[in-house]
Length: 101
Image 1 (cartoon, rainbow, N blue to C red):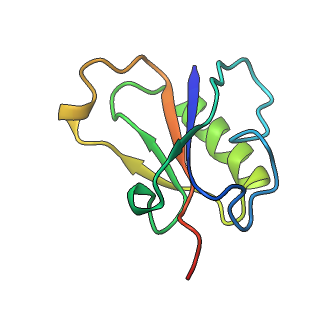
Image 2: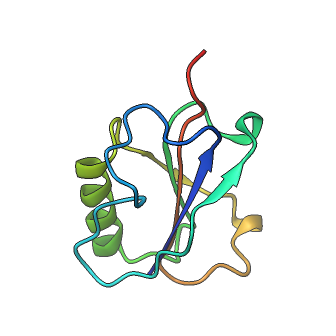
């Protein structure tokens, strides 16, 4: 499984209670967090993934771990299939919301 975090600048966003994208309690690859321009960040925290490329049990575990570590918990968002051609199985991306104001 791979969890990637995308975060707006400045960092940390309000409500983030963890330096990692989530408080994982299972094996995962968590590469470095990538900074994106605030204008590219979502208005709310997102958990992005490709339908058909995630194990339902793994998705549930990731959602539970992130709900415990991120406030508000990321909203699941299924990506358009055109974005999933080169995505690994059980690849998740956490996108933190842009700062309010």
